[in-house]
Length: 284
Image (cartoon, rainbow, N blue to C red; front, side):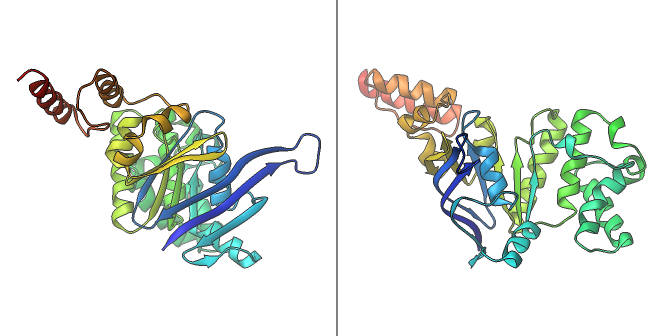
């Protein structure tokens, strides 16, 4: 089970003098029950990749498969849009209704769910993101703080019960409690077998949440694998234009000075132990 892209290319304004290819031969699989973190510099093509994954944009070439079935026909594309929920960057701009409750209920209603059931789903989703539906439901979404608006937008996606969830820097603008709620939601969804793609620039989030990491550079895949596999490859990280995590950079510097330390360490404590062992070997 998974959402799979194979050899995806995407060109804007194809056939015109202004044609620009933003995705180049990208292969990516989002597995059910896993969190994949997507990283890359601004302009790397991350948002375009998300729009292809959720069916908002049709690739110029390549194929998409949803849980083993090719997405080719009109019905296949509709199934993709129903299976995949997306929370865009600055997701608070997605809000439009007079009340929070109606805004969150809009997605389920658009899926053909009856109004009363849609409102029930909206209230459940608001509670899930830590907003009391009795308190927040009647409010205007535009009266809320930026972080609260972000959570309302997330509730709107959750209410549609997607099997795959795409999030474009969702923690931006959230305070510490809001981040904790976000992480709990993602971990719960992973436990329920949902597939999640999470765009972030924060290595701490990657190490806390990710099962796998995918690096995008100038519209092409730069690296992919488990957290330790990706973070152990300094060359690929630099090629993708990313700053090294502090511990990785420290270990890289020590290795350049001849110390026998690993390329990646999961914690400061483990790093300190590795350095101590290496120094013990150098200075017995």
